[in-house]
Length: 330
Ligand code: KG4
Ligand code: ZN
View 1 (cartoon, rainbow, N blue to C red):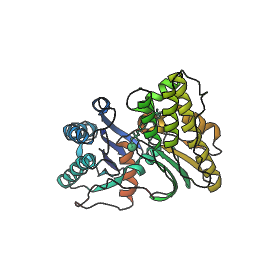
View 2: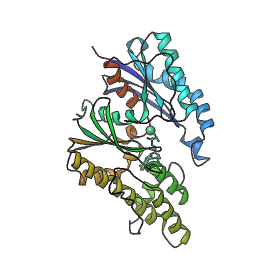
View 3: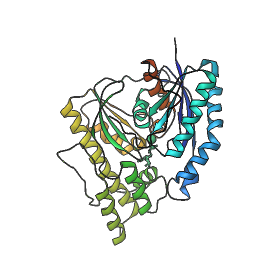
View 4: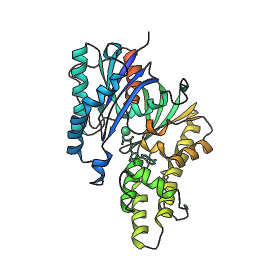
């Protein structure tokens, strides 16, 4: 019997709903981005985000479900953390209300875990569900997290490393602000870097004895470089991007060799970066799975995919499901 899960995601600045069949086939995937609204302020404003989720969540869910019909939906998976409390609350409460009304199970899903499950989603061409082999090493690089996680099976995680200061996406966002490139910073830096040369010297924090990351020193060095003047923005963007990419790739590849994993799974908004992708594919001794860019950034299809495996295993949340803004993985 096929199982269709409705995924709901409102942890930050995207209001999203999706229907996914059997944890991989995307029936619908609707994302309403608030980027234009927050760009005015140079970053996400929590109060504005939650109000916008309230306005958008019902139309977004209706649009996602229109393609599937309610009677064909077997369960709901909703992000309950980590994220902005007011934003998470909108998704969690709507999910519980729908579950109660439709008498279907609801399950709270960890946003970071769901990013990893974007690798289970079928991407073009249709029918090409990609096989994930355990144990695999997952690098989750988003706006709030840079986690290196050993995954031994569904729901079995061991966190090996994390960022000690700025997350990789946060570093891109701050660097873009310093360079006056706007928000969100990742795509802006990538665009500027495409016409630059990574010729400027910027530091890399290797933290040799650990799987942790650190990007705040790089950000400070970038600030000094820019304020000294006389450098070209594309060259600074390209040099910054290269510094982040080199650290992420070499530390992850080193861990993959040590742990003898079958595969490396990239996920999170920063995984949409083409230079990162290129370096991973060139340097990794094992296959690297990378979701297509629109499934790297926040979406609800990944939430539904993650929820599918949990619901299949018999997990379900109660109506007392609450948000956990500081939730981590492993
Ligand atoms: O996973 P995500 O959509 O949201 C969070 O869970 O945080 O990640 C957003 C982050 C932002 O910091 C954004 O600048 C970064 O991902 N990002 C990128 C790219 N696209 C998005 N960073 C580097 N290169 C990109 N192409
Ligand atoms: Zn995310």
